[in-house]
Length: 349
Length: 288
Figure 1: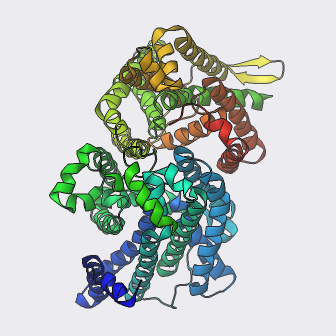
Figure 2 (figure 1 turned 30 degrees about the vertical axis):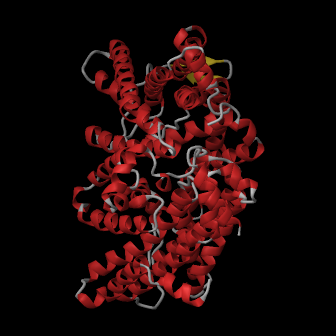
């Protein structure tokens, strides 16, 4: 890509829009935001990363993972325990935890799982996340077990809310820049190709297994780092983060926001996190609302909020079942094979 | 030896519960994430009927009948109203998975609202125990074991001997093949959901009388059910039954020798091993 073309490609409405959003988020603490608002904002940024990378697996790559919260908890606990027991700076442990979690997850889950399809992946990853609370209890000497882990070193001693907010924002922006590069890069194209015409994509050299391992590793790396950032900004952890409520919340973030889109999980994370805080007084009603919302979204507008906010024509096309870009590639897409050839050819170069 | 009996009882319960899951998957290739909650719902329905003061004998029969009725309507309605629409989509496997996940969450919430978070259980059939040559065994355990085996046998007979059961097996082997011989696949899908939900509801009653029930135990049952049917080969009933007894025994022994905290890690590692050793054997069956 030439320099001029590069500059032109940077000035699309999308990049401008993202820049404005980031600038607004960066200015937020100066617009008279309360500490509580900053706390919420911080959570939104962290969960946006988790939701986006979950969406990378499910919405883009068609790998039905249900264990991403497990990656998150793993990163959080690894980083916290390393920082406490080995007295290493949280900045280093965050990255270390990401790497260790990614290696463990990819070897333990990714390699066996990616030889399988669909439902097996979903359940193995779910069982993995479900086994973690037991493991945390068994290692309570370091993790604090069911009581939780307190006094985790923060990024700076005596971290203020606004500092935590900026750390989370910075992390969120970095994670999404990487994500956009993956999706628009070769790996993203490879999955479009595999989805649209698997036979053709494979024939010209797209390797589902290799690309799958790649996104699995990247997704677990960033999700675990998000967990570490969570641990070192809040200073405490509990296995409650693996509870079904949290699982449902993060799933609904990318699902309601719009699976298979870049903006969807971010919008969803903001909506669900803030909505959750305001509905907190209603207790378990939140769970019912989210469950019902998932049902309705899957049945009536599988593209989520992003799809709803899209053009009216795009909205009406959904009934024809033709919203291929929003539908993960679980079945082999016979009718869409013609488009697949193009993407496959581009993915190879 | 008492551990073996409790393992076998547990296994028979798991088998009865997993059969419904494997039937639905085998026939329609829809994986029902709300499966465990369906079982719990069946148990709660029976619990409600038992609470009306019918007395235990009549109550359990009426409760089971009520559970079957509710489940048939629920399964049939669910297929007609929602699953059928989702199956026509490109990403139907993904869509049905997320849909049933949402359904499970909603059911959990509704059960929580209706029955509260307290642990409930169906009263045991009898408190007595009987002295066998190796020691004392609860009669209730033996009755549950017998009933579960009877339920599974009844399901097997239904699938082997009745026309509807044979049609279900035909659809599970090949949808186009079933269409060619004149089977209405749509209707068989609906029957399958109704039938499997009814079986699952009954198994929930048995589970509720032996273990206990809370609005969220459905997740645990669903995941265990899934691991069982993976072991046995998805959609294969005999395989699921053998796997359920095996895993029930494993659970009983792990609980005895290592403690209940190790149950989940044990299930997980067995699951991973099973997937790595014979994924292709497990994957065999009708192509999606």
